[in-house]
Length: 272
Image 1: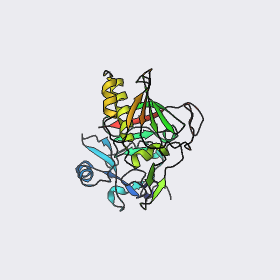
Image 2 (image 1 turned 90 degrees about the vertical axis):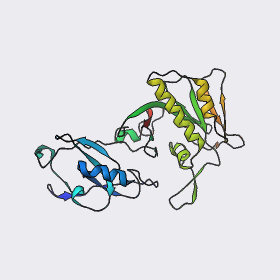
Image 3 (image 1 turned 60 degrees about the horizontal axis):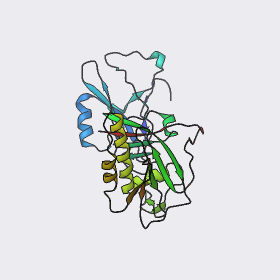
């Protein structure tokens, strides 16, 4: 490939879940003008946009919409020191977003310290980022957002399984984030408890008053688990009665970062 050549940029990854930036189904990066990107976004579930304002007040958008190399997918390789914006060549900024460890329909994204080394924890539109600490011990995942006076404990169960791309059941991944993302994959109510914990932390960060009684009522509103809180009121545990905790789950220290062994915060992105 030479400088000045027209190219297409294929976007994808290894995630078996569809309609995500890192999905196995790859599509081309498109830059759609204002009159086109809105319709594409509304009509195509694969659209993943990053808007940029043009000089005339309109907007264009980077999208992942299709796999056919057409006009909007034709990119050109130009050395940065030779690029001169003009009326027919608009300068666009392409931000690198970190690929989340778990992504719930693009509204809730969980990032580990390792994933944040490759990009920014952000998304389009209004969103809030909650930093938290994470550790695993004795088959329990622990989450602590400093905005709240208590941590949340979620057990990893021996019965926790997820399906692969062929629909076959597989045991959860034994990596650091496998048990977390598995809660989303199996649509566990425990994933909803984690979302609510992070949402309450975001509200408190924004200045709202914490109502711990309301929090406990909301996370208890499921048939498959009960909630326990210790005497110091600083630890809430999701207890799934009648299910065995997976004691073979790996131990993850509280200050562990998988790539650098340094204390680095995890984060949870909530968007609207």
